[in-house]
Amino acid sequence: MKKTKQQAFTATLARTTHRFTVEALDCSDCGADVRTNLRQLPGIQAVNVNVPGREIAVTFDPARVAPDDIRVKLESIGLGCS
Image (cartoon, rainbow, N blue to C red; front, top):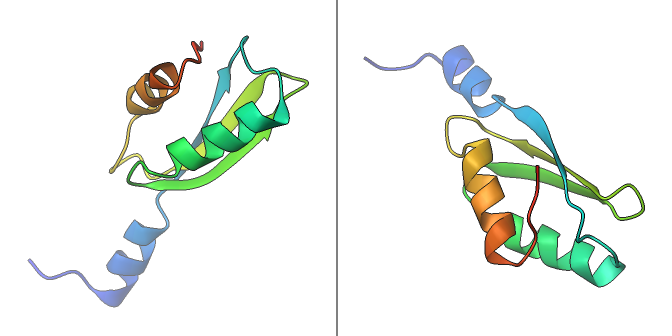
């Protein structure tokens, strides 16, 4: 079934934001690494890193990537998170 223009437009706006607490986040270089690595995942729309608060807020398309995928990526660069 072919999507209407409105359905296609709405589908491209699908997004959610998930916050991760990362204890090992302790410098701005870590924040830059996080942004670079997470933007490699499909569906990532924004990555906001709060180094002093040890928090990462990721806005993404839930149809393309899941919070568990983001968590795995963070762990792959040495940052455990909750």
